[in-house]
Picture 1 (cartoon, rainbow, N blue to C red):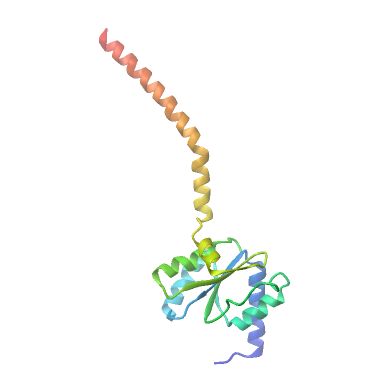
Picture 2 (cartoon, rainbow, N blue to C red):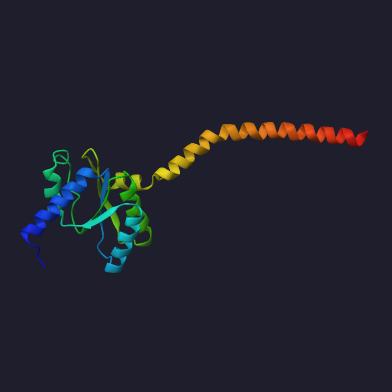
Length: 175
C-alpha cells in the first residue's frame, strides 16, 4: 500500500531528526524475519534506549541529504529491505542490539552505519563496533584496573599481619 506524500514528508523529517541527533545509527537487512521477530527486536531495542524504524532507502537518502553533515556520506550500501536503529545516548548500542539479535536470528545482517560526524561506516566496521564492550563493561574494567594495585597492597599487608600472628602463636605454643 502506497503512503501519501504528507506521510512521506513526515517520515523524512522524522528520519532527518533521528540522524541529526543520533550518536550512532545502523542499518541491517531483515529479509526473512516475521512480524513476531520484529516485535522482539523492537522490545530488545527499547530496553537499550535504541529506536528502530523501517523505512524505504530512498526516503533515508532524502533524509540524509537534508542534513549538511550527511550530504557527503556514501549511501551505496542502502539496498534491499533495511531496518534502521538509532541511539542518541550511546554510539555502539544500535550495532550491539542488532548484532545480539542477529545471533539468534541469522536472517538479520548488519549492512551500514553512520556516526555522529556524518561518516558512513561499512559492514566490517559496523560488525567491529558491535563487538566492542558496552559502556558499563568498560566502566567495570576501569574500576577493576584502578582497584587492582590497592587490593594487591591490602593482600600483602594482610599476609604480613597474619604471618606475624602465626609466628606469635607458634612461639606461644613452644613456651
